[in-house]
Image 1 (tube, rainbow, N blue to C red):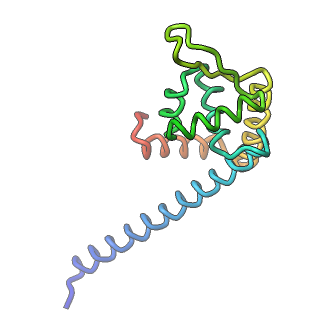
Image 2 (cartoon, rainbow, N blue to C red; image 1 turned 135 degrees about the vertical axis):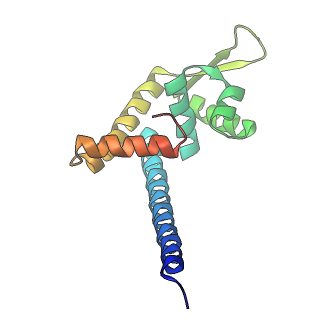
Length: 157
């Protein structure tokens, strides 16, 4: 026969596992929603481009001009795939390429004026969707979620 202490320990382990599974479900839902929003945002940026091209343009928007190899590494993409996508971005006049002044063999990518305009519009769309989800949240709720996510991501408070 189980002792009350052992039964409590088993229940505690089960309750913890239930909580961990529930957290996993919510994280999975968050990642799925994020992917879907990225696809929609990508289409807002340019409907004929895959989301991976949007990632490249977004990275250039955030971090500025860079070599293809640097962009490929930063977005965790194969260099040849990055080159193909940036060629398409260049064809659509969303990205500009110029020789690297420090290494004539290299190429520096940057967003064109049109690319900057389109990326800003796409980011505004994404931000609108995001804000709609948290519109009725209190400041306390926002702060609490932010702190918990920082902790989950292994960042200091």
